Image (tube, rainbow, N blue to C red; front, side, top):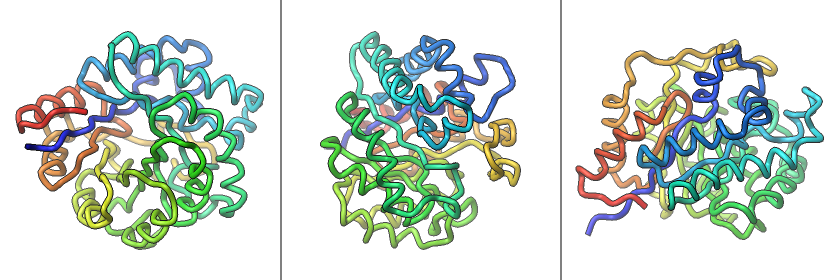
Length: 299
């Protein structure tokens, strides 16, 4: 009997930008959620309708260190709650599905060089974990780019009493290396010290994911990937408080092309797949179709 495949959703932030129609800000997805949480719920609904079995909460950037620069730190608990509520509303409307509580990097994405020390990071993350864990089915730690980042966030999730999935982002040209330059294989020693159920790759080009998954497949955990559709991570996006318009979407990664990558990952043992930035509902729909054509069920 073939194993079941968990089908994650895709990008929420980029879909919000496309639908809202205004110039993005460094907290584009959070600001839109404050103005119109129903729009967030509608995007979650679109992914469920496309075949996704998990809604990832729109809480990736909801961290005190990111909000304080925009005088929104006082909204942090409200935002955590409303991000989960938007996902749950879509799940309840659809009638099935699980909720993954998204936990993004402190300070900035793709910048492991400026992440806080492990103990400091763990303390900051602990508040978020304690807030969202009771409301979600899974804690999804995303876009981890260094061993230090992994240690900091996993120390905070150990007492969350929910399954923890941790997802690493690898070098755009070398899937065996984290964005920090460290070897991907070295994450095994870190995650073995914590309660981790699945190890993933996200926000990396699909072309390098295969090599990364061959490493993850040896760790004895459920594994998988959800890649991005960026042409590259630009230098402009690595500056302080960037906006999404510093990145450009690929023109050669439509639903058919992207789903071809994903089916290869599944054939090679991946049991959790989906999409990251610039991967939308039409991509997820095509993946769902191919999963069923391969004879797998979605979980």
